[in-house]
Length: 428
Ligand code: PMP
Image (cartoon, rainbow, N blue to C red; front, top):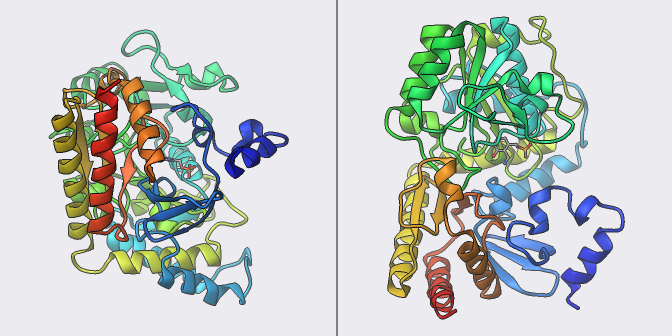
């Protein structure tokens, strides 16, 4: 028995499924999760002494690589000064100023402790601001696990939503309309029928929770137009894409300005942080300025702010995102080439520091297509790479992430592992 197996057995005694977030349990790929001891730069080290090149990066935050010395030092400096005050600190102002400088659509920003809180609060604000209850989201997008957002499409287009988890009240799910990603006609039809009842559209401007799916040209611009026409709030959920696809997020990259933005992951540099913000007119309705309530004991936590601020400072250096994108490009080109050599059908998507690989020969632009890929082949690929010291997301429906700590050698080593794994797939 490996140490990971021992620890997984022990974890299941008192932790549901042995994990504190379901995807960690490896249900998407089979087998048992690896338990990690430490991480440094591009590498994870498991409890059995194995090293992995990491393309999960704690699901996005570790854009500078793990345990970046400057981030660790910034945290260390704050540690002796107290862990939490539940009262204002200068760090929070510096964070708010930096975020609003980097993301010009945000006039005001409120810090929270997770992406789930950020989207949940943005939704409440959009509803309170418009006085409308219905919301529009897209199939395959994930916005955290607030009740209104754990809803899938009903049986036909434009039907009322169905809870995607027991425990989500049907009455609430019925207020959530779930449409096809990248299908602007469906959005226009929906608003033509019930636009006056819809508070907001919430969208991942690059979808990262059905693997990685960028918006088709005109999709985000079309959402902007529809929201303007019907007085609905456009919310970009940039929890994953913010400070990941470009310094100004996906909104900077595509040049579309939302009314509100949810942030998380990179903004906390690996500490538990989220944020939501947007236009002054909307954000001014938030307590204590306005009547719409939202709060948090640990919000704006000084240690988390220190880690986040240092991370934002370092990714603001000129050329950071060009270098990151070039690494992703080398990785994607190399994977496609190795797959073709082995006769494996593979397509890729990428934006900035995030990527998706699909075992199919079509370019994937929506959830339905993502589910049509060869999932069995993905599972075999995942385990083949794991065995060869490369850690990919343990699910075919998650995006991958590259950090600035990944070297050319790391990418070449990954491609060598992929060539062997593709060859093994076709030899089956
Ligand atoms: N929105 C998006 C786009 C996400 O990717 C995630 C998490 N993967 C969330 C919201 C929820 O964030 P958290 O897990 O921090 O609650």
